Image (cartoon, rainbow over all chains, first blue to last red; front, side):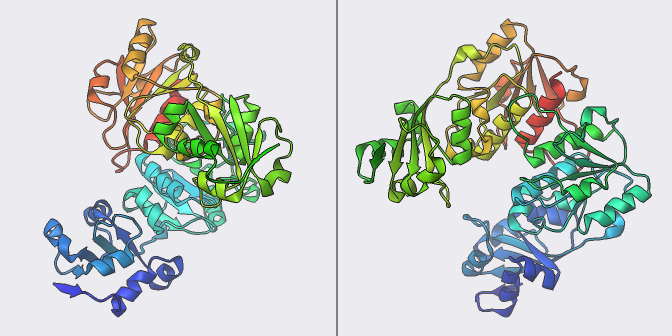
Length: 251
Length: 251
C-alpha cells in the first residue's frame, strides 16, 4: 500500500486545492471526509479515485480496497480536514454530473442562489428522502462540493442526481415536456400550496435565504406557491419550506 | 443616559455570566444580541430589563427608550458578543415561562433531548409559523437561551410560549384533557402520518438527532407516527420532520 508522509508532496498539494471551488473545477474532482460519507460513497459505487487513511487509523478501515487506499501522516490529515476533530479518513472522487439522468419522470428540485451550505446539504438530503429524481443548483448558489454542504447532505448526493447548471434552461425543458414548474414566493400573486393537487412529476424552485427566488424566474413558472403562515414568524427556513412542499406535492 | 466603560464593572460581570446556562438560571435572566432580535423583543413587549448599545452605534438606535438603555464601550461589547461581527446592540431580559399559557387549545410541540441549538431555534421558528400555542423543551435538550438557539429562532420565542419542563408531566396533562399525544419513531410500531386526520389540538413529540424520542416516552403516547421515506436517505433532519408534521397535522 502506498504511503505519503510529507505535506510538500505534489499529490498532497493537488488534494489541498480541492478544498476550494476553483481547484475542484480545474481538476473536476472533489474530496469527502469522515467515515459515514466515505462508506456511503463505497456503498453507492461512486467514482472514487483514492481513499486516504491516516496511518494510525488503518486498523479501523482495513476492509477498504488496498489498491485504492493511500496511508497519510497526521500532518497531511490536518492539512486536508475541514473539521475540528478529524476522523482521519477521506476520499477523492470524480465529479459526475450526467445531465441525461434528469428526465423529469419524477419530481426535481431547483435551487436559486441558496447561500448557506448547511441549507444546501439539508435540501439535498430532504429531496432524497422525498423520492425526488434530482436537484439542480443554479448559478450564484453555494456548491454541493463545499465540505459543509457535503456533511449536511449526509451522502444523499450519491442517491439522486445533483447538477450545477443554468436554471432557466431546465425550466424551459420541463415546460416543453408539459411538466409543471412551481416557483415559491411570499407575495400575493402566489397561490397556497393547498390548492395544488399532488402529482407524480413537477419541478419546484426555492431561492435565496433573504430574497427568495429571483422575480425574473418567477415570471417564467407555471405557478408560484406560498405556504400560509398562521403565527407571527415572518418566514420559514428555506430547507423547511422546500421539504413541506416536496413531501406534500409528490403523490 | 448611563454609560459603562470598564469590563471590570460589576454589572458587566453579571451580564457576562448570562452567556452560561448556570448564570442564566441563577439570575433568571438571559441576553439577546443583534438589531433584529432586540427589535422583536421591543415589538412583542417582552420583559426587557436593559438595552445595551455600543457607544459608537447610538445614533443608529436613538429611538430606543433612554431610561432602559446603557451605552457600553467596544471592549464590553466584545466581551458579551457570541458572534464574529458584533452589531453592538444587546438586551437583557427576564425569563418569562408561564405554565398557564399552555392550555392545549392549540397544538403544542414537545422536544426530547434535541442537542443542536440551530435545530432547536428552527423548531421554535417553525412552530410559530405553523400557529402552534407553544413549545416545551424537555430535560437533556439544549436550552432556548443559548445564543445560537436564540439566533435561529429569529424572535419566534416572543410569539409563542416556550417552557423548559418535564415532558412526562405534560404528556399526562394532555392525555387527561383527551388531547392526542403523537410521538415520532422510525420503527414498525409507528403509523404513517398520512393516516392521522388533521385536527385543531394535539401534542407532537420529536427527539434527539441521533436516537429519536426516548422509547419510555413512546410507550406513553396516544400514537407514534413516522414519515415514509421514498428515497435512500436514512432519515430527515429533526426540524424538517417536525415541520412537515406540524404543517400537515394542524387543520
